[in-house]
Length: 164
Image (cartoon, rainbow, N blue to C red; front, side, top):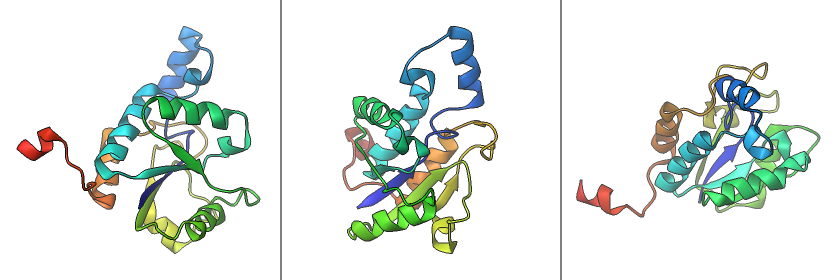
């Protein structure tokens, strides 16, 4: 199994999107998560056949189910890492221990945490340039290309890919 460990802020939203939300006075989960970023994530999931696991601090709030439902609307079913005292690296390691069938994984995060060891750092695709202070640019097509390059393509190919 391939896995994409997913942060939300700085990955599925951006400064540009949040400025747009303020002007349009959007409400609900769509005011915090950019659907276009979800579509980019969906492309990566579809092409790699990876499972998505939330690592975002959103897991500790009522927003967790809202974001899982929103992702499910786009065909992305997400699991979550366990809570271990806000130590994101340890949470990822615990999830991996509990799921030994993982062949490969990437971490999509806009921040680097102290609990990220060398192994986790080698799997990190640092998204955005906000470094936890702003949202930055969020997930971009170049990031999707990195995900696909690191995880490889899934075994199933689309008709269009087969005919190329």
